Length: 138
Ligand code: RTP
Ligand code: MG
Image (cartoon, rainbow, N blue to C red; front, side):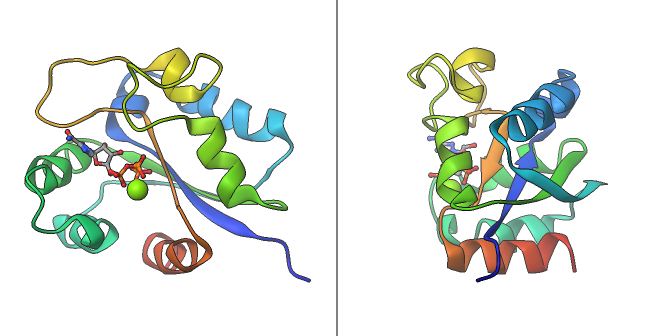
């Protein structure tokens, strides 16, 4: 059995606020392994493909612009059930209601921006993880 892998992104708000180290610390403290890491100034093409499931939604344009607004740190992490486990570490999408103890709950808040700025992304299924890892670590 090969160990499960997921794609984690520290989004531009997380990088700009100097939270990359804190996110990496939490991934490692949980016991997951960082297998690969890169800083990326993502193109709109890459971001539109990454978030293709949201194409057509009202927040899609602002989301792509936000994700292109600064560098992103892409992480390939591995471990048993790391996909589900990192989603749990990240917390709910809306940082105002994300539980304390989670990355979004502890470090995020509503900034009144056009799109929810919530510090991290984590793949939500084995299929998404495979697809997204191929995009970001081509
Ligand atoms: P992610 O894909 O980034 O890990 O986040 P998620 O699964 O928790 O949330 P998802 O529904 O996939 O939405 C993707 C990202 O789009 C932004 N968003 N903004 N109404 C809004 O302003 C809104 N809804 C979604 C967030 O950055 C969210 O993480
Ligand atoms: Mg998602």
